Image 1: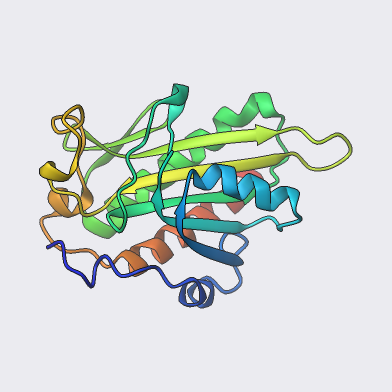
Image 2: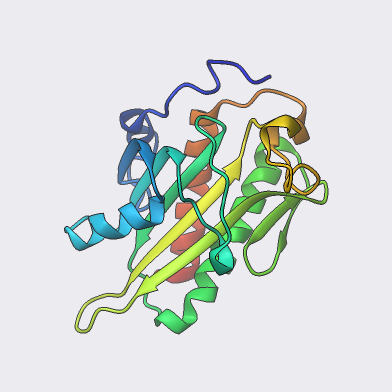
Length: 206
């Protein structure tokens, strides 16, 4: 199930074409290796990147979750990405974005793989009572300008139990393991971003 084809690098141009007309995914960037997609997306925002940017990394060396916990981001084994948004929310209201993203990820997993995915508040997604995905939202206030929100999402796709560190072997799972079949990473990424765009527009845009 863990094939070389599955682990092929994501194609930014193909994703942009699949997401034509969307806000989320209007620009897609795929990088080979970064410390954290949230950090790089924030840098790009300060350099003028537009809302809707989605930044993927094939590998994160310092991916993180809530409360500074480390997120394991093995190359080619998951979807590790961040979305740049300008919601009409104060930084103190970022929990609304976390709930939106977590619920959307869980719903897409259910739709695409017929797996009962549940959200463990505030930001973890579970399948078969094991963590399969997580969300990290970071907001920056900007006086006189729309606030910046970076929505980081990590999803375990193809790891076997042996791929997880000892501390995660009994608590984490991948979608390939849970679904019992191979998964096209490019197709799932496009489906997820379409769902995130649709639900974001419904929840946060007039």
